Length: 218
Image (cartoon, rainbow, N blue to C red; front, side, top):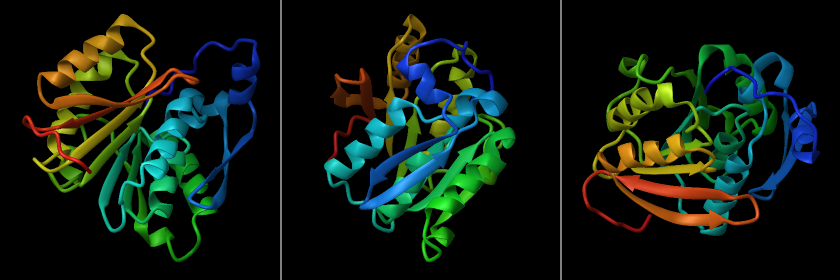
């Protein structure tokens, strides 16, 4: 969601982030995404958390057919694209500065018959909520959106607005700092939260959250 780039550095991971494109294979398709670190920073590169959540949704066989899904802080659009390919009706959101870039990746990677099922829309957490019907989504998804402490309250407000009692939140993240654990505590004050997957090779956790004390299957 944030537009501020991380510091440039060396190493294989940094080189991957600075590549002009990245290619993935999900839902029996090849997905080729443009990246633009220098123009948009963290919003325009693919992070491991998105890849891990895409793989989790596909490997677990979670039924997304005709489900209503919203993705927060979509960045390059990988997660929203994969969820659309898996059959969902998807609202793919990010801040205004990232939308043109996001839209181009979505349009380039969805076959024409699926494009109407994916809508790219502006959402600044805590500020554009009147544009989204409350509690209207089956799933709320986010990949690596928990890293700026100043956005935590607005993110929680947004989650509460978007979720009904039946909505499932899936957040994929790497726990980098103490503040990330603080967000999880804030989330647990409002939702029932369970860790459902951990990818040790990428050090990425996936958390499922729902209102109340339910621990339902998908």
